[in-house]
Amino acid sequence: MNTRTADSLEQDKVLDLHDVQDGVVFRVYAKPKSSRSGIKGIAQGSLVVRLAAPPVDGKANKELAKVIARKFKVPRTSVQIIAGEHGKQKTIKIMGSNRDEILNILKG
Image 1: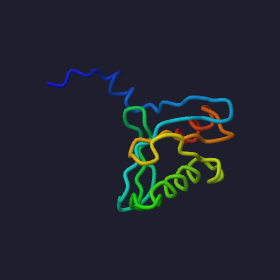
Image 2: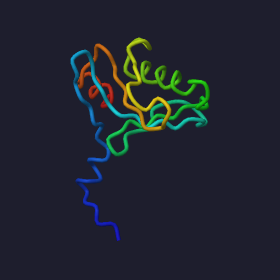
Image 3: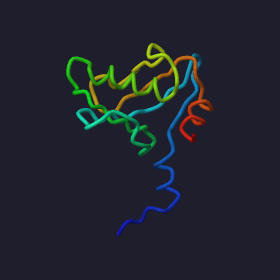
Image 4: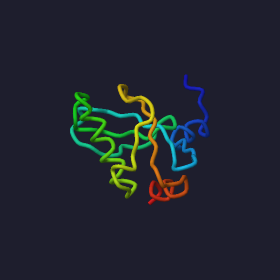
């Protein structure tokens, strides 16, 4: 029997965002070798991103930066992977953005 409450299930769908001095930081769960690239949703505080690119020679990371940049309307060079470069769970920083801007885009 699942004993999780509705509140805890709803919290799983909230992106864990942090303003930092020169941007905003959040976690991403990357799903490489998907049928297409795009934002799938939010799970356990992370943005879930499907990537058509394979995790070979940095191709998936480049595709991830492209998808994030397109979604949040920033230059690709503003998107940095600051942790997890070789894994599915990554920490992303968007330079020059803030928590409110990201939340507004996600809501729209």
